[in-house]
Length: 322
Ligand code: CLF
Ligand code: SF4
Image 1 (cartoon, rainbow, N blue to C red):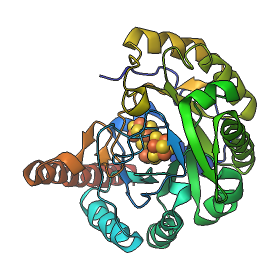
Image 2: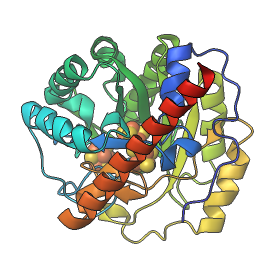
Image 3: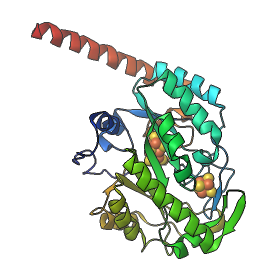
């Protein structure tokens, strides 16, 4: 069971407008209280990636945000819209539409096409995205244009020497960069991008993969930087030891907890992440993409009954007041 976070949603956030506060309160990842009430749908429309992390096996979903060893079926933007319509009709408690892979959303033009279609059809939904941040400064305008209001950037190091141990290479503007040179480009773009996104009113979450012996002593420095940048929440995820990092032991629960505690004075900590698939939908703890048709029907029936019951209560309350 993921640990609970006592601070999320108790935090006072005067800098956000009312509409944004509503979106945070209805976002199952940004507000721990929302996780049992509201759901998200992930649309797996973004297969390409422009970097190579050492813990990534590219036949699977991006592990900077998703569950390891899982391959989501890629959808076209139109298919993604159809799926959203279908799912939302049955499960209206889904308030967030996210694109988190299977690769990097900013490296795929389909990400923006999909968000445009969704925004037109469902203007009230929160649009969410998760990226490695390499293209963030140059894509920020598009991100704002399509209406993304919650954005996750994975920052695993702000020291290029450490980052160079985590990312093997990046592909940037048609050229491959390696080592510290690659790390410098990515970190610069991530930090500049996050700063500009915060200034533009986007609510930022930062994911950090905790890699023992590589960035574990450095994560608190990242947290300090996030505080400076005005990042809303940080999600420290355990290493998934695959790919070139197959021989590194993932952190224990205690080790991760200690790092979270050290970071907490600087930035709010998310402790209820479920490392979802890039095609997950439903509540965080109840991924319906993995349920049998029968169980899905049950969730649907319960949900509709709950809504009916809520309507009845509201009607009665209205009568009493009148
Ligand atoms: Fe998806 Fe990520 Fe948006 Fe949430 S997931 S794009 S912020 S809507 Fe949430 Fe899933 Fe953890 Fe991600 S539980 S893996 S943190
Ligand atoms: Fe893999 Fe994600 Fe890293 Fe790309 S950003 S290499 S998909 S873990």
